[in-house]
Image (cartoon, rainbow, N blue to C red; front, side):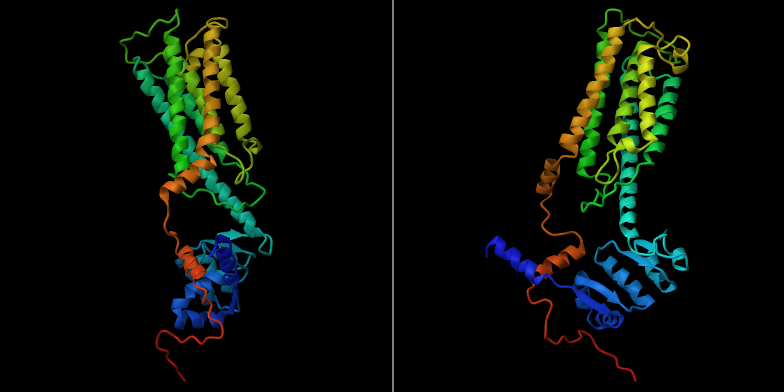
Length: 388
């Protein structure tokens, strides 16, 4: 038949729901276990269930791959609240002890709030991981580049990067707010998904190019004198100062890139802890590039120079960092988070069958037009023990 007709038949025959009470659920679970998963997939209302049956229902849903949530307001819901992946107590009674979440609203309108906050927490965890990973790689690249010219970052530079930038940004990212709307699309559930890996690899490439360009541009200046030292102590020089300036801008760039907003979190500028830190970090870094007072420079560990000395060179370093920023943002939008990349990944994977059990059952039901059996008696598959 045509695809349109097939879609109509599938919709027509799958448009049904099961409503049952605790006794019916117990009978199906005990005497018709082969039908239980099919019934669960189309079950909509479960009424008059005792505490054990509520727990069994949650565990049965989890057994076929569902993430089960449970709302309850009494002691008879404690078992199901504990067994559920997300348990929400609607009262301050015994159920609040068993559930990880307690709502001040005595109805299920709190469920979308929990889902939105949970997605926000997940995306914030991913953002922090990506930020720390990029920070470690950036500092590792800086050290490797400086080793090629027999120098390294000074202790003051390491201290400013680790305490002044990274620690503050990492703490501020946790204050991201949940988005106002609940969208149907689920967030990525793996740190090593293709978009995350592509994002990290692309940003690392831009970081290497920017730092190397800054060092090469320094070496082509007429006034440049290579550092020569036989001492083990690292002291301020133009090589580590240039790499330090470029990398500081890159840390600011990374904090902005990983703080993505909708559809799971509000935009980055609504985070009133991160926004001031980004502005202050940018102003301090730019101040050190263009006007490092001789009194301040030794404390930061950078090369001391006058305000009007090598001004064009320092402005070019800022331009290199700006180009790095715009390329990184464009790469994130047009490649790492683009729809064509996700479509390409789906084509490469070519999943022949669903991974989750409930999706496989749903696929079977969509092809079985004799289910559910109406006006047909069904016999139990196992022996029935009748006690008087």
